[in-house]
Structure formats: C-alpha cells, structure tokens
Length: 489
Image (tube, rainbow, N blue to C red; front, side, top):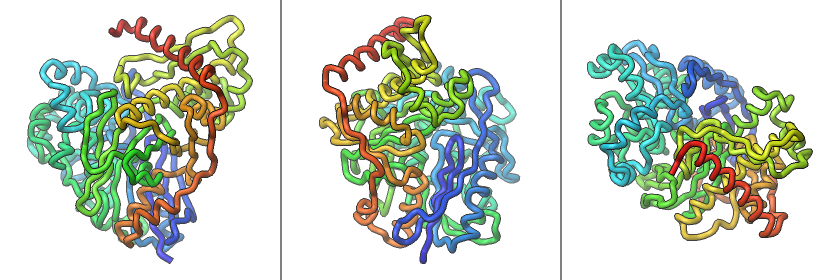
C-alpha cells in the first residue's frame, strides 16, 4: 500500500494526515502552535516552534507508515528572515494578521496606482500581505536592512523556512500560489517582479526559487533518519480548494478556522475583481496555471475564542452553538471585526462592535450575535463572488473546525438561500495537499479525486425571503453605524 503524507502548517496548529492509495484518511496528528502579541496590532510566532510542530506532527506518522510522497502547505503571508549561513532566525515569524505594515501602505498609497498593482499581483495594497510588513521590519532595524543588502539574509514564508531546515539548507523554495501572497510576485509572468521589488526596495536575491505546485521539489528529513520526497507545495487556502475538489470554474469553498477564507476557481486566466475581492494563483500543475477569486475574513474561530477566553461566556468553544440557541433577543447584532474588516471592505483599522444591547442582554445573545455576524461576513463575500462570476452558486462547500457548528452552518444556509455542504474530511487543507502529492507522484487523476469527495452533512435553507431580508437589514444597519463611528466615506 502506498501512503502519502499531507502537512498543513497552519496559524494555530500544524496538522499532518496520512492517506492510503484509495484516498482514505487513515491517520492524523495535530500539534498546537502558540502566538504572541507584543503590542497592539502585532502578531508573532517563534520560527523554531513552527519547525518543531511540523516535526512533531509528521514524525510519528512517518514511523508508523511507509510514506511515498509528502505535500506541504503553509500559512500564506506569514514570513521569517534568517541568516543565510547559519539558518538562525533574524526575526520572529511575522503572522499574516500582523498590522505593522499599515504605515508602509499609507506611505505608498499616494504613489501606487491600485489598478497597476491589481493587474500585476491580483491584490490590494494592504498590510495583510508580506511585503509591507517586511518593509516595516527593515525600516525599523538598520543593521538587518544592511545584512539584507549584503546578501547575508534569506526570506521565506513558513513552507520555505521549514524546507530550508529539513533539507539542511539545500532548499530555498516556494510555489507560485504562496509567492502570489507577497505583493512581490507577478501572477502573469509567474516570477518575482522587478518593479514591485523596487517599490518596496528589496533585492531579488533575498527571495526563494519558485517551483511548480506539483512535482518533485527535493528530499527532506523530518528527524527520523529517512529522506522523503516533497511532491506538492501550496498555500493553505489553495490546498483546501484542491481538497474540496474545486477544479471547475465557478466551484467555491469556504474554510473556517482562525478566519474564514473563500476561494472560487476561475480557470487558467487571471481576471480582476470588481467587487472588493482578490485574484490569486490557485496552483501550477504540469505547466498549467489555475487562478481563483479570494475573499478573506480574518476573524471566525478567533471570535469564538474571544467569547470563551476573554469574556468567559463559554467553558469551551464547542458550546457556542448550544448557547446561541438560548438567545431570545435577535436585535443584538455583532460586527466581529476584531482584526479589521478584510474582503470586500478592506478597512484594516475597523474595530468590532455590538449593537442593540439592553439591560436584559445575556451571554447567549452576544454569542448568537457573534455567530450571526460571522455568517453575515461570509454572505458578503459569497455575494461579491457571485457578482464577479455573473452567476449565483448552487451550493457552498465548507470545511474546517467551525464547520461542525450546527447553529452557524444553518444560519449561513438560511442567509445565503443555498445549500451548505460540509466536507466529510474536515481537514480539507492537509488532505488537499496530500491529494496533490498523490496526483504528482502517482498520477491520480483530478476526475478520480473529484469522485472521492463526499459531504458529511448538507444544510438547506429553512427561512423565507422576508425573514432573510430582515436579518440582512439588521446587518446593514450595524455596518452603517460602524462606518459612521470610524468616519468612513
């Protein structure tokens, strides 16, 4: 039996899965990854901890099964700088949620044509992406900036950092889907872009080689004394798109985790969004490049963690659905912008807000409002994707831990007015990159992978149009109040 290993190096944990030749999930292991918040708006991780979690998640599975191929996905915009000789980190891992690049974006906004930037990268000038945060780090540390100019430093997203160390410094690589999240990669020419590098004053030598998403990258050792072939590299949300078998144009998925991330497959030609979304590279396989529309929502699971850990409303995040059903006041509304508002608004300075509170408001009301707010944010992105695609989706595929929240999934189906399909394999991200490795190493066809996909549960809309419009009207009033509070035009 041939087994493949898929590793999802995520924001809050690293998860490894083993698939057999039939695509069945036979084992998995997760290791938690902590973050630190040294000042408001900053989010960091220890690079050595990232490497440790990958080894600890993968090693027991490699020992237990004869692994023939490995796929690795990563956090996307999170990056590390390290010494080119010793491999020692020179910065923390600067996490995608980090806001230290906001000032860089504000400084460049007056000289950058948004249309020019979107045409090259598919992205917006926002601190979500790697380049503004990288520039902010170098602006703050003249010694580090000088070392970068001298060629003594290497840059990498978490995949690149991990592969460098697992290969003993032999591999300094990433794939096009991950490179496309930096604001430095041209999604048309599929290379680091000289004009973008000049815009952020960064040398090309700092950055890794860009390899196809599928195919042999090299061999690495996870610490068990066995060299294994890396056959697939992807950014995490694109891995979930692959794992959800979204191979045809118009197919759409939403992965729920720390945030919620929606991608819609758009085929082999990039096209800009007219509704506040991003155009991103989905994957490059066999010389063919696929693209996707991308709508990120930065706070989902983290909002429920806030209810449990900061407010003390819940003994465990898994209790949120039950508590939400106890709510008796639908007029309490939450905009869960605890890390700004991403797609389709792109307001990084937005703060979360609660409306409609009374003396009788309860933890159940606030919990229910938070879950409703998460669903409303997903609704906004699905609506934007439908507008860009010119057609309404027939269903939405979902995966990730919060997809087990029955209240949230039913409210989302009611709001969208379409079916919500929960993937039977919840770890679609790790499964997706494992399947891509299986495709690259053993020729498993996309048709076969699509035929394997199954829904664990399907949620169907249960409310009428009048109730749907009442819910959306409450949300729109809350957004209008938030705009007024922040002074947005």
